[in-house]
Length: 247
Length: 294
Image 1 (cartoon, helix red, strand yellow):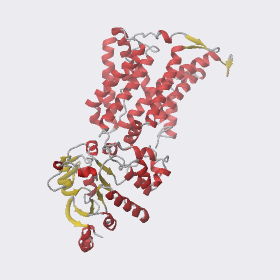
Image 2 (cartoon, helix red, strand yellow):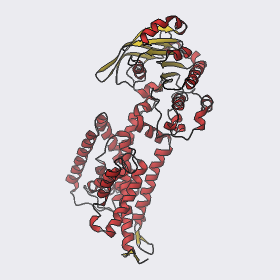
Image 3 (cartoon, chains in turn brown, red):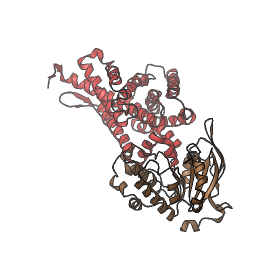
Image 4 (cartoon, helix red, strand yellow):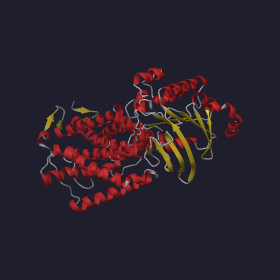
């Protein structure tokens, strides 16, 4: 992608990572949920966070987005520090978030939901391309957002962050609770996004699904990253993963 | 046309008009309360004091600076809205994580302070505010005389309510507001400066109260208690309409004003309590209010 080539050389850290998370700790009130998370993501990669319930995957995404009240450590994006930034400032840097509960607004119709996130940078997908990727959203444009099926709501939740020009997507369990055919469609969408140069950090419980879309997998346990597996090594590491995930 | 249900027509229509005027104020005030409650989760008890400030600022502009009604209609809401912005930034913003009760207590205390200051400065007898010459006089409608200014109040209040509703339902800004009412952190995570939006929304709600105050200045005498008397009824209106419902608060405001006016004609003894009786019935049958989502 052209904007990748023209990115200033100094803007990236020495590791060449687009996002570098190191020693990230986070608290909800008194409860200490992240205990030093280290993750690097290069431009154009799709990286998953695997782990059991309560391992800290969602907390990691929410911390990156600035939604966990208290955070320390370091979250660098394009070389800039964001660990203590407000969510709207983080969003304006080009990071977009699709929450686990999808966050479709009941008082807005589908089109309003789709157009809600403001443009943060030039270069977002134009609306007609979004409708090509997600034809259902055009058919149901005037429906109340929460009247859509679970799969359609998930499509809408992803679609609305593609318009904004954000290049770094945080997707929290997009496959959760959806029928296999919809999960396949979400998988196709994520691969299509990768082709278009988006960088994706994906939380997944389902590593079979993760395997079909990701380049690398981080495994989390007790608020820490405990392992990293490249996608091509995944099958060789199945025993290890089974142990981590308890499946 | 001389008598309707045994009531002289001029009396009936006169009370209907009075009801409509009161309804216009109920609607404008409960609209501001609904907008503020929806986004801030604060029951703005100082709304009546801010209404009173709107009338007083109009009076002060005229008395001290010679600035008349039409400019006051713009300047007073802006100035009082600005005090709202300052109030939100310095005090109210600290309460969002706490129970509703804290916001109610804070704004109640603030309304006492504001009223106290004005009573200390201007006494409680009230100041007259002249109807602007362009709106003085009355129309002869055949069955009754209609003071021009009262007609203006109803039309202008309707216009303000409809405009506010259109902004909230049909614009991008309104979509941010509705979305932030549901899930403010997510809207902020999309890149919207939600804290600033909350501040401005509070300012706008307060400005609406002040605008109603300017409209009221030539009708009621401008005095420090004028808000207190009104706001208790407005809270009942909000409860009946459903907290947080924009359209509900407007319709309920006008509707209850008319009900109150009609009660004055048919059973005057109940006119002061009819709204509270309706409130009790609505609370028993539909606790979320007529237009509220349970």
